[in-house]
Image 1 (cartoon, rainbow, N blue to C red):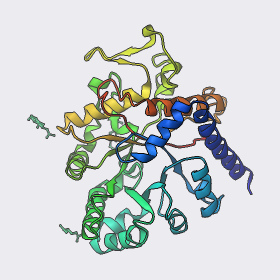
Image 2 (cartoon, rainbow, N blue to C red):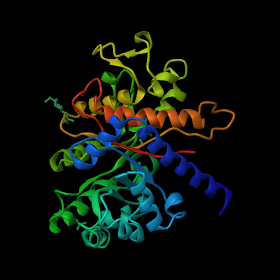
Image 3 (cartoon, rainbow, N blue to C red):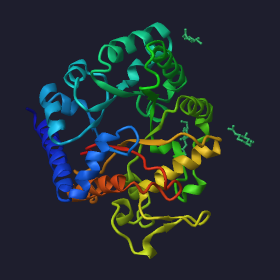
Image 4 (cartoon, helix red, strand yellow):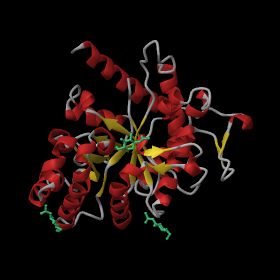
Length: 338
Ligand SMILES: *[C@@H]1O[C@H](CO)[C@@H](O)[C@H](O)[C@H]1NC(C)=O
Ligand SMILES: *[C@@H]1O[C@H](CO)[C@@H](O)[C@H](O)[C@H]1NC(C)=O
Ligand SMILES: *[C@@H]1O[C@H](CO)[C@@H](O)[C@H](O)[C@H]1NC(C)=O
């Protein structure tokens, strides 16, 4: 096992152990998690991203029993690993599978390819394996902008294939975005989607609205903190309790923001509203805090990462929504970032 792989493995184990120990402390939290498994479709949850760095290290069976022991019932995969999907059969673990960016061209340009992708990666496993979503590409608009024109066609072809299989009500299709598609995040009331992306975002949001699918966002308060040092306090980024004077107040709405993640989520809601879309919910497909920074990243420590993840879990299970949408708490998939 290569050294870096071992480190990854180690960190994942720590995260899982930490998730459990921090929840085991409080029976109230344990009750929350039980409730969460009973009403998985309605209640906000915390899931975990499973990268190939993890799935390459543990056998599918070991990974699945590990998730079960740790009571992790929601995962997102960056692909549609057949062995893992098989191993997830007859468990309560709900899974978002992904279309890697390098398959967008094939799927976006042929309905036949999209249909066979759905046949091979969804129909073959569902419902024994609880596939609940398909993430089409990852941060396509910012990392492979040349593929942007393929995004909606790929989503629509996959959706048609799901309709043909009569699975479109159970399985939602969307695409995860980088936080950077939203500009001027603070104050959230002034946020908007990068206007260069409007021609993609408008039909995409209309699709999400029509199909009851979420806007998937990868949101890392760490980077907002790093880019606005001195303006955004560390405590707000880590969900630490704040004195009222440290809360950020949106001057237009007078809403008080006690943490950066809520501000990022509300910025996404405001950006959608600017495009007249108000009925699409935000799903945080990735969040986390880097733990192994170099000398230029003194805040990327294991302590801060643990604090972030633990407070994030509490925040989601508190179900207090965001200042703008208190009735709506976004579910979050944690990603362990080095
Ligand atoms: C895929 O099918 C849809 C309707 O089912 C159609 O509008 C679209 O043009 C087709 N796309 C391709 C690339 O054939
Ligand atoms: C907005 O998007 C365009 C096209 O992807 C990009 O070139 C530009 O840098 C983005 N603007 C900002 C402020 O991020
Ligand atoms: C949103 O609605 C307003 C008012 O009806 C309209 O002026 C604007 O063009 C719409 N914007 C989009 C992107 O549809």
